[in-house]
Amino acid sequence: MSRMEWNDAWTVRPVTLEDACGAADLFNARSMHFYGENQSSTDDVLLWLQMPRFSLEEDSLGVFDVSGRQLAMAHCVNPGEPYVSIGGNVAAHPDVFDCEDLWDRLYGWVVERARQLLPHSDPKLRVALNEAVMENDSSRRAAAERAGFGAVRVSNRMGIDLDREFPQPEWPEGILVGTAEEKVSLASIVEASREAFRDHWGDVEDPFEQELGEWQAWVDGLGDAHDPSIWFLAFDGSSLAGQALFLTEYAGDSSRSYLERLSVRPAYRKQGIALALMRHGFRELAARGYKRVLLDTDSENLTGASRLYERAGLCVLRKSICYELEFREGEDIVKRSL
Picture 1: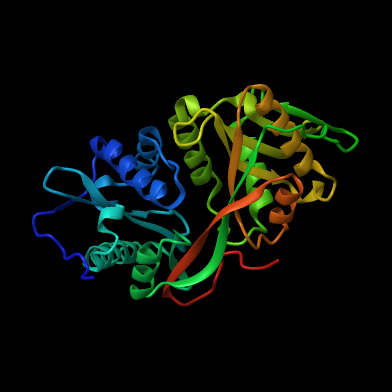
Picture 2 (picture 1 turned 120 degrees about the vertical axis):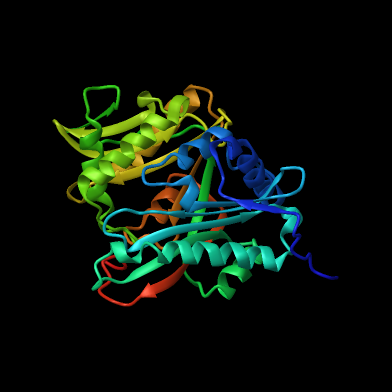
């Protein structure tokens, strides 16, 4: 069977905000092909197209057929300081999966765009381009490897159905649960998250004000997907010990919630707080009529998160391969081990 050839009638240009619906259709066609479910919504796409430092003109590229349908998209994520872990992404519609020339052009563009960010980093530091590819997306994985990427890690999509009885959460002495509806600043939530994730594989310490600005832009852009009453917080007096931040929908589906972040500060670990936060969250979401919760996690999480999730009842639904292309050798400030 012959492979599809590049079509010179296709249009190649940066994407615009008006392309958000077409991009969501593209991502959902791909996800439906592999897993029989949608993975995105127009609002989701609009949110990340407007993230801090993202330039539609410089950081995105779309491929459109003669009817204007979006066939493929690539983008590069400007990470900000310290510019050592650059994000990239390439996606194509199932109709053009077998067009190797399309994949290679998109990967070539992503690599070139990412290299343009190298001068922003300290020349003593190691710099790499990273992306995650669904395990069974063989066409994209082959293209990534042709572009020089190597597999370095596996990420798990996990999920749990809420049509069951969950045990009452058991809180350690002195720990009380609340929500972000209370007088809790976003800055304190970000600070607690930063501390908790410093020993997670792949973590890079960004300047605090930069990260706080990214969180604020994300919260502002979530719209109806943000409900502070399902951002569950564990308190030790006035100190924030841990957090489980749920979203009100996943890919536009209000019957599914997504656990955006679960974290416990190091001083409060091994006391059952993370498990209690999940059980509390699952019970609250089930009472509100939610049917399922999804999350993504590093399969080899340095702090044992995958085992915790399994204990809470979640199961692995699918895997993604984390790929990396090294641009420059040097001191590696990305977290790799404890």
